Length: 394
Image (tube, rainbow, N blue to C red; front, side, top):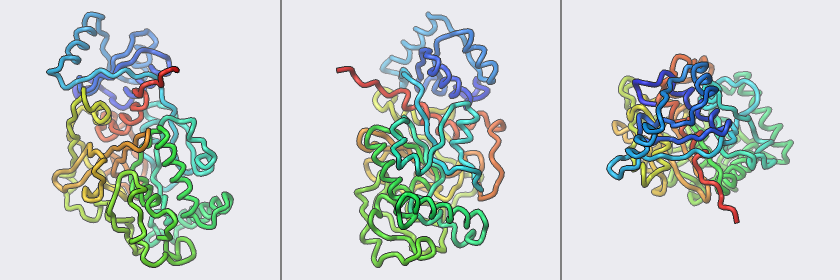
């Protein structure tokens, strides 16, 4: 999985998932040649690699022992982690075609990793219990329809989305979309606290935390829910309820395409050609989880924009780990934390290979970006639950 040897880094994750499904022995060699995978050799696996265009090397038992010995040395910042099972994957995303695309759905499809799409009905009916890993699609959990009001309120897709969201809320017995979305957010919170892994990108990151912090507080204006927000709502925000963010100031103006001070999009002063973020180095033997989540063939990743592009360090809780940051602009791009028995990762931006993805833009063709470092970070998260230890039998 290093830069020079692998022709298709993204599909290599699919091969690893395929190996787990077929009960082959798999080890993730952290920090060894870009985070390579050591897999039991079979003729079927070789053929699958060739079909998918994934580079591989066949090594002897003695060479394998030599590599594992090198990795185990205290002088090497490497570790070997056994992957135990193929995780069950859910993507939280509305049904039907939308005027934007979801990077996670695209890369799972490209890597040939199976997933199921769920949305509010399934979440509220406790379907999350079936899954090890949950991705939150570009989403607004505050009931403000993505703060798209100023630019898109007269477009057919916005009008239809609002109509469908209101109908769904009414179907589930809620008076407002914001109340129904909060109920969904609380179910997702409970899923993570109970031991699930949640991965979110773009506006699903900050809007999720804002919804939790604003439980029982009306922060939506009349054009979103039919009545004004309640007076002094900023002082009623409870930061103890959030996963990652604290002390943020909400954006009161419904005409502004922004949720709060968490996002750095409007504060950025970085030219596109200079927009990169750096992955942090962790001790592979002591900090195994962040090491897994930052495996890559480069430490420097090209930046990309989104409704929520990056996170203001002043609004990140001290308990949350920053795994990728833009030192040029003093912003966090990739963060991770623990909530109860589970884990969450927030990744700023919308599409790692589309710098300024906008509503209506064509989808990214990942065949043109098979070695994308930005997309590798997503797939690290997909495989992470496979490394979690099985419960001990009692």
